[in-house]
Amino acid sequence: MNEQQNPTYSDHVKRSTYITVSVVLFLIIIKLFAYIFTGSISILSTLADSVVDFVISFINLILISISLKPADDDHRWGHARLEAVTAFLEGIFLILTSLFILYMAAVRMIYPEDIESSSIGIVVMLISILVTLLLVRYQKTVIQKTSSLAISADHVHYKQDILSNIAVLVALVLAANFGFTRIDPLMGALISFYILFSSIGIIRNSIDVLLDKEIDDDLKEEIKKIVLSQVKVEGFHDFKSRRSGGSRENFFIQMHLEINKHTSLLESHNISDAVEEKLKERFPEIQIILHVDPSDLVEEQEWHD
Image (cartoon, rainbow, N blue to C red; front, top):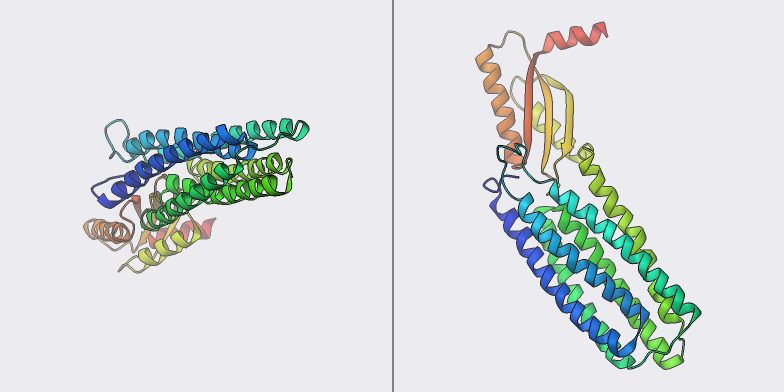
């Protein structure tokens, strides 16, 4: 991605990543404190999740900084795909964490233990829920401004963290007041299953980018309207596209413009430039390859086919 084309994208994404790292580090500290005093498996599940979050967010900080660099001689198409790599790694880490917590929950279901100092755990989970709510709200504003793939993956995960924290809070209250000792590992297992299945969606989205999946249909429709609105463009064919990573509107397209055969080479060139200029006005991060074909030749080729 070219930062000069959209200087605010880099600022928003980097700031969001710094804030996320700081918030997760705070959550790790208070959840570790709560686990030491309570021994709760459900708290352990959210603690392990937060530790993984910190590792991932730190990796994000490095990879996103690289992905935001402009194109260079060795990477002529830029570095934006690193955001998809980041999201993919996040999904893998979350799956491994979920499997570990499921194992811990199974052990505690077989050998249940009472939760000590549950009031400390309850207070910590209330703080965690409030802090995570504020983070999710902030991330939503960043996504609206940037459509960042990496921030979107984080946003989905931290929304799930809110539900996970609420589940832990319920487990602590039930265990402390009604003696339901097995509710704690049960909630930990349910949270892990939830994270496990949501991780599949994160991985699938990142793979779509890495395997050059076509852009969304609504973007294609916008491109079609812009191209056909240009004077003397009679149509286009052989349209291809792929996501580059980064924001939703960071992608590559190529197509053959259909122009009347009596149009001069210079005018055809100017028409092609005008189409490219209009597309970049709407999609500043777009990369475009255009080829010009005589429209009547296209018709003949189609007729012979």
